[in-house]
Length: 390
Image (cartoon, rainbow, N blue to C red):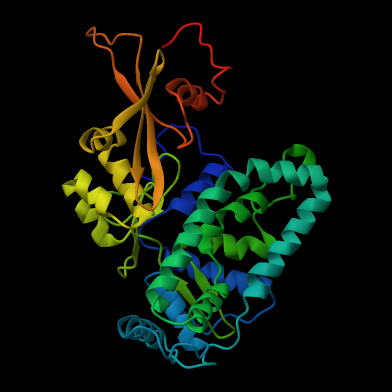
């Protein structure tokens, strides 16, 4: 599904949460001028001199590699990625050596301003008011951006240190701790930067998009992750593509679900991370191939794609119970829980007079078809007594 939306002429302007939702999902080239202005605003608000250099990189992967070079942790980076990060640093006039950018100032430009804004709002709204504000703003975006940020982190670690020891993986994670998440900080910024979001009783300046967080907010609207250091800032581009399902999970069956301009990409099927080559196999799946898959999680993806009903039919599954509600099917899976389904027929005919068959996946412990159908309604078998089936 597409994640980008545009307002039609004459349509009602989106509210604060929708504006920040669009920021979190934004794709396409960064607005470099606006992002760089936001960086300088953030430094000034923190009482810091403006950074001497701003380094643009193609993704959080390249940004993490640059951060590792600047902190003396880049010795074992994959050669191609190290070369790209080195080129980006030198193009901006920064040598890729430890100390060239000075110490991290993330705490000054992001952590402390956020704490101050939250304290001010908490004081103006009280505990209950703050909780209500978060529920109406940041909470609406939190699950999606948290999952996305964690997937990016995991992808970076797997790319930079998948075959390395724990120390190298820790070094990669530490480099990401220096990052401000830019557009993926949308939940926090939605909660503290929109004027009037707390309601008129909170006062006009309770959450004004000004002051200490104006800089980080400007960068978030304009770019991706960024690493602030005393003398230089590393700023990553936004993705060029983002594909998600209706639940907000990364999802694409024929290519990267998340892709950056430097080629860093994540692949997923309905939120489940998968290898790039895995997706190429889906169109040629057979029941035998699914059965032979040793990775239980990948097998589940295959089953979702192939269809549980089709798999049961082609695998020679046998019904284990039958009653007036439907038919219970089960087939064992090596190294995983059995696939257990209830086959039910819609009692209301379709317009052409046919009755449609549905397959409902139920827990492996299900013993009867009635128990399985009842479970889909959150009931036990004894409590399931429909007056009319539909």
